[in-house]
Amino acid sequence: METLKESFLKEGYIIFKNEVPRENLLNLTSTIDEWRKDSDNILSHLPPGRRGAIPNAINNPHFKDMTAVLDLPNVYNFMRYVWQDDIMYGDHFDAHINFSSGWHEDNQMKHFKEGNQYQGIDPFQVYQIKHGDETMPEKYEMMRVALYLQDHEDNPDGLSVRPGTHLHKFDKRYPNQDPGIDIRTSVGDAIVFDPRLVHKGTDYENSILKARGQNRYSVFFVFGKVRSLFTEMSTMGAIQRQVRQNKNEKYVLQDYVREKLNEHNVLSIDNAGVYYKPY
Image (tube, rainbow, N blue to C red; front, top):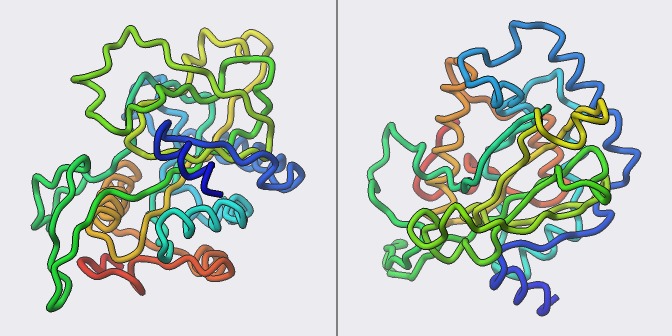
């Protein structure tokens, strides 16, 4: 476990092979296809290559079966080992079909607009934060999980990353010419990465999968160290972003999601939050 930790801290990502049984994931593609048959469910206000996003999919009862992706025993053990603390769900869950993206990072703190009394907190700095009568150092400690619902051993159309870029602000230190590396995975493999890591999907319209007549499906979600200002600010940012994208009135964490998280002793911000209680 220590070797995995060292690799994650240095490179910004690791892979858990066969973390989720393959048979538990394959039916999720048809669930996404069914949802997309209704044009009202397509985020037409987004650019064409990004309309394949389904923000906060897991809290839509149509996608209830997606709770299968939360069965990650080895991943949770790793998180607890690295953080030496409990885990909180980050309320950031995106499903995708034929989604295209360039190089970017997934830190959600930047989306926290309303009610943020900690504007300007830098996810690359350590802060002395007051907890009751104590002042303790806090730093950004979160992990994003990516599951691809088709195999990528023979194609580069899964996730690409620039190792080590979670340690610096990528747009200043890492030029666009950096080609990164393509991660080759099979269905059931879990890619765990620091949300600050610079990464990208693929340009689906010019991809090998498109040429083969295959759709490209993926699911991304996030967790953070409990009782952390960074985790809670990121969670608040994710909630506010998803509400805006889906044009919802408010955010709801469904009971079936909460039950699945409870099975793995993963907390939610409403029962573990120190700074915010959004729902």
